[in-house]
Structure formats: structure tokens, C-alpha cells
Image 1 (cartoon, helix red, strand yellow):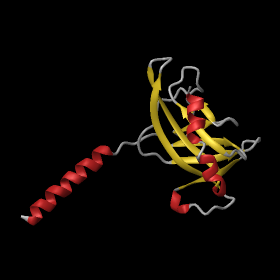
Image 2 (cartoon, one colour):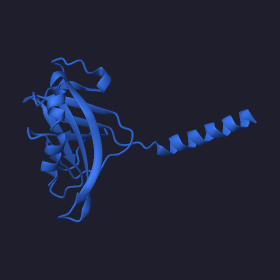
Image 3 (cartoon, rainbow, N blue to C red):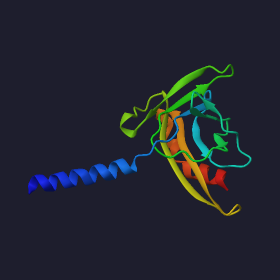
Image 4 (tube, rainbow, N blue to C red):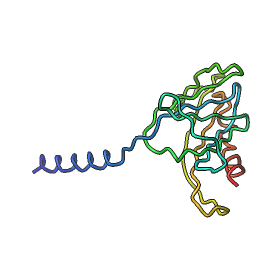
Length: 157
């Protein structure tokens, strides 16, 4: 009886976890050299940047505002993403993504706290999908990250 209950619970858990798994497109994020701040992507924008790919990866180019309006559809699901600083000659320098337990308050620039979501665009009467994350020296993450909400809502409206 115990073995049967264990088997049923295991199968149920396997079904739930495999049904929740969806693959998104892998992405390359190209950020201006020395940029520190919040990054915002707003999807499905008619006047947005055209969809660009590099080796089947989506490519997002940012300017110094940290805001990108793109024609890409939202990109939900499992992804392998790469974040880079790009200098004036196009040379890329990897920016590593960290989780809270990896922060050391150093001068190293990292990508942190990536979130996706949606709100409602009252002007167009449609859902608006977005992605936001922070690029900063580890020691500056808190001061920059604390301004995320003001930054995001100011750019979405």
C-alpha cells in the first residue's frame, strides 16, 4: 500500500513538473559599455526594433536609456541567456548573472534580478508584456535596484 501511494504521488509530481516546463528562445543582451542601471524590454511594440537573431538566439540591443521597445513577442519559458557589455568597436565583455547568495558587494558588474510580467496598456487596450533586470556593480545593486519600480512605470506609461 505504501509503495502504491508513493508511486502515485511520484507520477503526479512528474506530470505537474513536466507540464509546467516550456522552452523559450535563448537570448543575447547587448548593453552599452559602463552602463549601470535598470534594463527594460517592452514586447510587441509596432514602432519597436525589428526582431534580430544571431545563431538562433534572439538579440536585444540597448542604448544608454536602458529601454528597448521591440517587435518580438514575449519570451516565456526556459532560456539560456548571455549578457554582454559592448564597446564602441563592437567588442563584447561577458556580464555574469548572479542570484542573491552570490553577491559579494564587489566592484564586479553583474546582471541581477530578472523578472518578466505584463500590465494593461490603456491607450491601446491590450496587455503589455515586459522584462526588467538590473546591471550594476555588486556594491551598487541595492541602490539601483530600489529604483526599479519608478524606472519601470515611468517608461511604460
